[in-house]
Length: 353
Image (cartoon, rainbow, N blue to C red; front, top):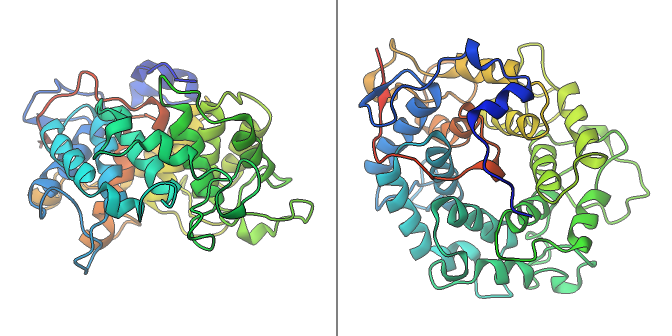
């Protein structure tokens, strides 16, 4: 099922007090007072300064395809930075076979799912993305390597290619792809069956779901992806509602989220939780305010303005570029299934100071 792209007004039904946040200026302005556009503008400039239009893992020469994909989605969500987003998408197409880890059906379904989300948001043919049929590639991994019915798994790598997070991304991306059948009932059922009794999801696949989950293994990021996937696949109650309720129960006293229960609040997990809560029409405004407190403002160095710090403190490029890559989409109040570049501009605005 293809979700209808929502406008920012949907945030009103998600508990987001839009009027209390700074609203966007004109999308083609060189400066902006909109936090999402400022964050996306920062990402665009970082990509422009990068090697061949993509990010590297900090301190390495290895390409960070996932982080680059997140940045493209954030620029699309914020409606700016399309010059750099287009170049980064073209690079992702060029590197797609490397990121997927092989040729279908021996590919990583989570990687293919991220690329499929980018292809849809960027209006690139997902069945010819870098010469690859992403939809067919994902579907071809279902039941791979002797996996149970509905589970997505690279048949050549049964140890590292499957997780509840990967399952969620695959279900979400297929559900968000028009002109396809979407995820089948077995894939959605397999994901729902991984839910713990308290509503949370864990990273690792539970081979025996009759065994109770260990609370310490409950995972905010995985649960946030699962909420978005289940909603995109048509589950508007039951599993998605229970998972969103668990996410709200994990909100810390500072209104942020850490990846696991009791962990210190950080931008990536908070951004994913905010997206899941908005998608499920739950109260997300406190989490948005936590992200805003982490954003580099006018007192920061010019090149850092708009960036979102991973866990506060001083700016650290090793963590904060990646944090901003996910946080900008949340600041734009766009869950993953709602992101589309329609109406976006090429500009990379700086924070208005």
